[in-house]
Structure formats: C-alpha cells, structure tokens
Amino acid sequence: MKQKFSVLLMVITAVLVLAACGTKDGGNASNDPGTDGDNKVYMVGTEATFAPFESIDADGNIVGIDVDILQAIADEVGIQVEWRNVGWDAVFSMINNKETDIGASGITITEDRQKTFDFTEPYYESKLLIALPSDSTISSLDELKDKKIAVQINATGHVAAKKLQGEMSKNILAFESQPLAIQEMLNGNADAVIGDNAVVYEYMKANPDKKLKIVEDDAFEREYYGLMVRKGNKELLDKLNEGLQKIKENGKLEEITGSAFWKE
Ligand code: ARG
Image (cartoon, rainbow, N blue to C red; front, top):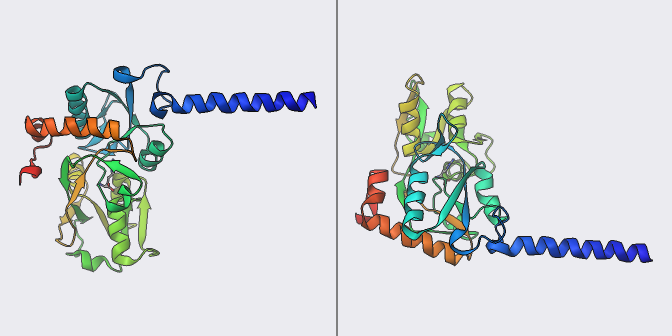
C-alpha cells in the first residue's frame, strides 16, 4: 500500500513537472527556461530543399529568401529566431506540438491550413506549374488526367494533382521534397511534376544538365506564401505582421524577393 502511494506520488510529480515545462515560455519546450519576453528565441521550422526560399549552403547553414525575410522582420520588431531544418510534415506538426513557433517554408496560405494554423499577411505571390522531361509532348494540365504525376507530399501541387485525378488516384506519386519528385520524373518514374514556379525555375538554373521543360497553365490559381504560427498565437502573429508591414513599406521585402505584388 505504502509502495503504491509513493509510486502515485512520483507519477503526480512527474506530471506536474512536465506540465510546468510545457507552459513556460508560451509552451516552447526548446527554449531555456526563464527566457521570456524580449530574450525569447522563437524556433522556426522549415524544409530546406526549396531554393531560393530555403536551402542548405556549403557550410551547412539554412539560407534563402525566407531566412532573409524573417530576419528582416525580426530586426524590425526586436525578436530573435532560430532555424531548424525539420522536414515538410514536421513544419506543421512541430508547431502543434509546441516544438516550434513559426513555420517559414514557402508555405502557401490555404483555407484548409487556416483551419489549423494562423498565417501572417502574404509575403510572396506564387503559382504552380508543370515540369516535364524536355522531350515530353504534354502541353496542359488537362493532359495530365491519366498521366503519372510526381509531387511533394501534402504540398499544394499534391492537392492540385488530387483535384485533377481524384483523391485515390494511383497515378499520383508523393515524395518528401520537390527536388525528389523532379528526380523521380527524370528517372522515368513519372510523366510530370506539379510544383511551385520560382522553385522549379531555380532548380533548372542550378541543374542545367537536367533536361527539363516547363508548361504554365492558367488553370492554376495564384498562391500566396505566409508565415505560419500556432492557431491563436496572436502575440507572435501580431509581431510578425507588424514587421512584415514595415518591410513592405520600407522596400526591404521587394529588395529581398524582387517583387512587390501587394502594390498591384
Ligand atoms: N507552396 C507549397 C505549399 O505550401 C510548397 C511548399 C514547400 N516548401 C518547402 N520548403 N518544401 O504547399
């Protein structure tokens, strides 16, 4: 009986300690305890095979447009951020687990994602396109109805492929990253890739030896990238939006991305 009681006591203590860890720093387990307020370091999750938005440089650092944008925002509003290359699924799941605070990964703001996450105002306008082996005769999205399409899993290209072929289609091959999807197509395992325009063009520039061609199709709608936070994390969202507004106004965002879509 006594033994049982002390086991129970241990369990209760453990639960209390865990609960305390979980709530400190707004629930960010990866922060040093007691670094609330201005010293708080916000953890950023990304999937860094997505140049020019995020990739790993020769020294192993995460670099790219998203890094520059978030840093510019952080400088404006006086917050600190720390980046982690966690993988595409984890960009989403780790926010919900409170292991990260921000998702910055060329993430398209979609209605579906807005059910689970909050997004900043848009910082980049994007569109899907079709990448094909250079000898392909395909010339429109419509022609992909019964073709094998490679995509990054759960990316908007995946959603577009499912919209075209149906949720259960066996002709959709989903990979961890967009470069992997392209490589699989070049290996002959798929007829086409649906992916984000700027990233496919950057891939072609970086890999001139790979024989690719592009088909753009008006059937794809405009997409907007936003920074993503936990639903209801208004404090952080407000800061990010405040900084974003400032770098829209002072020309910094346009300088980084080469686009000022919000003025159009
Ligand atoms: N914009 C697309 C989406 O939100 C693809 C983003 C993929 N990002 C990445 N870093 N791999 O679904």
